[in-house]
Image (tube, rainbow, N blue to C red; front, top):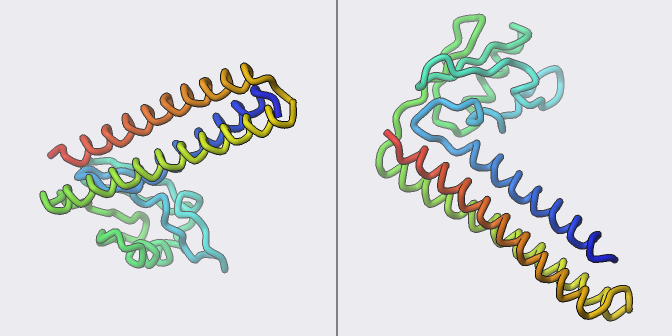
Amino acid sequence: MTSDEILMDAESRMDKAVSVLSNNLAGIRTGRANPGLVDSIKVEAYGSFTPLKQLASIGTPEPQQILIRPYDAGTIKDIEKAIVAGDLNLNPQNDGRVIRLNVPPLSTEVRKKMVSRIKELGEEAKVSIRNIRRDANKAADTAEKDKEMTEDDRDRCKEQVQELTKKYETTVNEAAKGREEEVLQD
């Protein structure tokens, strides 16, 4: 493996780790309505489990409300059942055409739990990034042993991998900090 291949592989894997973190953070409840809260819900409709966002348009007409407008009115009961089963602690209100979810404000205790969960997710992402760094460094060592790159190239490659690691860890910290601030806002 060349140093460019090692770096490209490490960067794409680190991108995926940050992407997973972003998806996980989107599902964390803040005091405000956010379509990301219901993104992970799978609805049993048409004989299989389908992501909610494929069955309905999801919007937030007010800061404390999520509005779900099914493309097919026949799926409204299935969507409602999936929301109740989804452990979001949200009570769906169905008027026959749309489902409204009122997002209650968070208590201080719940906010603290959310912040600690955000920190856990951030730490998991950083551990993942560090594991990718370790793999890239091993690949560089192996390439040098197999005479595919020189010692200087290996060292340069490891420095570039470390720079990538720092860059992605900073991205993770910023994403987690931003989400923490959203959770702590009233």
